[in-house]
Image (cartoon, rainbow, N blue to C red):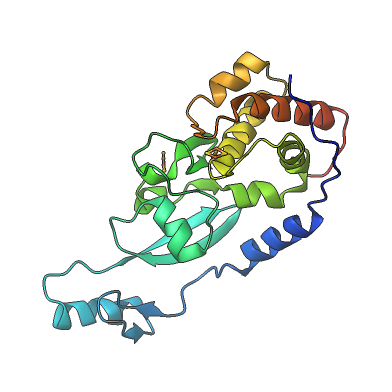
Length: 221
Ligand code: FES
Ligand code: FES
C-alpha cells in the first residue's frame, strides 16, 4: 500500500484565491458583444436588432442565467455552447477540464441538482434554474478542505488533469454516503478516467478525508 507523503500542505491561500475568483464573477451582463463583428451594445434588444440588420440569417447569441456555486451569473453565449465551454470561456472557471469532449473521461464533471454530470455533454441553455457546483466551489468551501488536503497528501494526481473531475465525483459521493467503502468509492469514481493511473490513491485520499471529517476536523459549512 502506498504511504501518504509526510508533508504539511496548507491550502489557505488557494482557498482564499478561489473564493475571491468566484466572488469576482459578475452577476449580470453590462454589455452585449456581437461575436461576429465585435460591436458592443448596451442591451440585448439592440444586439438582436444588429443581427437582424447586419448579420441576416445568422443566429444571435442568447442570455442564460446560471446558478453556480450558490451565485447567480448571467452570460451571453451562442446557443450551442456546452456548460463546460461556458464555464471556461465566459466565467473563467477552468476546473472542469477539456479532455475527450465526448462524455467518456469524466474530467469535466460538475454537480447539478445533486447529481454528478458531464459538463461537456450539457448545453448551457439546459442548465438554467439548476444548482451547479464546480470544483472551484468545492475548493472554496471550508467543509471540503479535508478532502482537498487528503488529495494533496496522497498525491492523487500526476499530471493532475483528471483530478478536478475525480474530486467533484468524490464530493458528490460523500454528500450521499459520508462513510463509503473502498468498493463504493471505486464504483462512484468509475466514470472518471486517469491516464496516469492514480486510481488507488483516490480511494486512500477519500478514506482519509472521511476519517478527518468524522473527527470533526472542520465544523463549519
Ligand atoms: S471532457 Fe467531458 S467527459 Fe471527457
Ligand atoms: S493524473 Fe494525469 S490523467 Fe490523471
